[in-house]
Image (cartoon, rainbow, N blue to C red; front, side, top):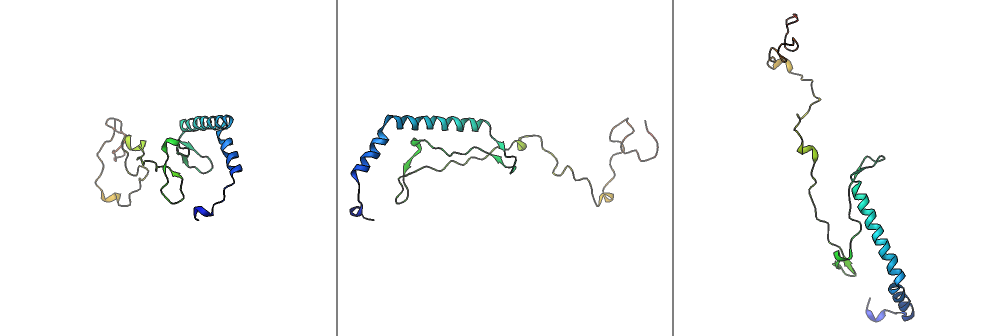
Amino acid sequence: MASSDLIVNVNNLEKIENFLNDSTYKEIIENSETFNTRLCLERRLRMPFLDPQTGVAQNHCALFMHSRHRIPGLKNGQVYSYPAARWRKSRRQYLLQKPHPPFPAYTHRPFGHLQPAPPPSILPGSGIGGDRGGGGGG
């Protein structure tokens, strides 16, 4: 669409400019920005939140961006855009803890009779363990 085809109603344009330059409008916008900022901070403190219906852990997301993050539009007709969020690898707490055996619940061994016998006594002096002779040990 060429610029010569545009028809601008000056009266409506002045109304919009007056509305945007009004001090009450600016105050409302600033109050909504502080409310949104406070709301996002409070939500971030409660993260991760486990959704009871879906069972999904909700994480923080950056829905609201500041005007200082704006960059010129990258595509035709785009007024401005925002940079992509930097990817960060999440730290997994279970990797930092004591290592566990790979399958702790797996106790059935189909070829267990082919493996060497366990040591004669697992708990020394208790009579419990590898004592296979019928006596009580002790």
